[in-house]
Image (cartoon, rainbow, N blue to C red; front, side, top):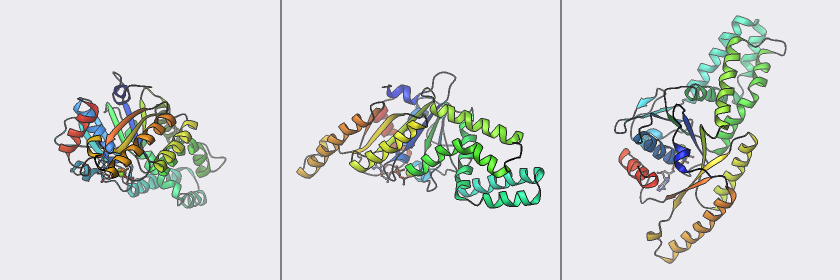
Amino acid sequence: MKSIDSLLYPRPGQCKQIFFAGKGGVGKTSLACITAVHTALKGYRTLLLTTDPAAHIGSVLDRPVTEIPTEISGVPNLYAAKIDQKKAFEEYRSSVLNDARERFDESTVKAMEEEMNSPCTEEMAVFQKFISYASSVEYDVMVFDTAPTGHTLRLLELPMDWSKQLQLMAGEKAEISENDRAQKERFDRVIRQMRDDETTTFCFVMYPEKTPIIEAWRASEELKTAGIHTRLVAANLIIPEEAAVSPFYRKRREMQMRYLKEICERFPEAAILEVPMYEKEIRGIGMLKSIAVKLFGI
Ligand SMILES: Nc1ncnc2c1ncn2[C@@H]1O[C@H](COP(=O)(O)OP(=O)(O)OP(=O)(O)O)[C@@H](O)[C@H]1O
Ligand SMILES: [Mg+2]
């Protein structure tokens, strides 16, 4: 099992990508923000990026977040950006169709236009954006706050079907253009990076209860088949020992401790980060900094 430091910090000259995934509401955005604040404070130029369609990174950071990576005041080295699904879709659609108009006849372009109305295209477009950030060499650390599990997995599986989709769009006999080829290469490179433990850390966030554990474990087993291993698990919302003074909270904490054991058994390859339940929701740079210090030291 790797040390938490080696899961968060890049090797010299490399970029570390850290993904946070898990069931809805388990704390992905919070953990992504805390981690990004920590690596930035450590001196690593960090980009915090969200692919969550309901992105509320801006409200957690208490700073405006747009599609253009913006410096987050109050945390040196920290930048944040979000991917706007609708815009990404429009950009992707017009770029593919413009390219097609130059190469194919009208009926093929029409067929492609129809093909692009599938819901898959929007995810493809989001992934495309994601790839362009992931291919950037400007950052030492990139922290990805991803959407709830199912969505994330579909995004990760997409590149495997990239060639198929290209062929479908272009028609069986058509040649793949230089542009398509360059894009496929970028896809492949990012996927290679995601499979490489040195450059990528995949973290599942869950609270120590049956359903989130099972759901994350299933998703993580699926990722394994794509060559991606879960190396970090954040067990969130643990009732602090000092708060477990009434029979009710003591019982709940005991239950959490049992599930923590189950987490360790189900994720033997992962380091476990235990995150306490705080008395209020996680919001604002001040709170993020103080949690980062408590969780990771400085
Ligand atoms: N350890 C914690 N202590 C107190 N509140 C927490 C803790 N972790 C998360 N929260 C709160 O729980 C709520 C959900 O957290 P968060 O938004 O990070 O989850 P998420 O997994 O990103 O959700 P979604 O799937 O909707 O994107 C937030 O209000 C957050 O402040
Ligand atoms: Mg979220």
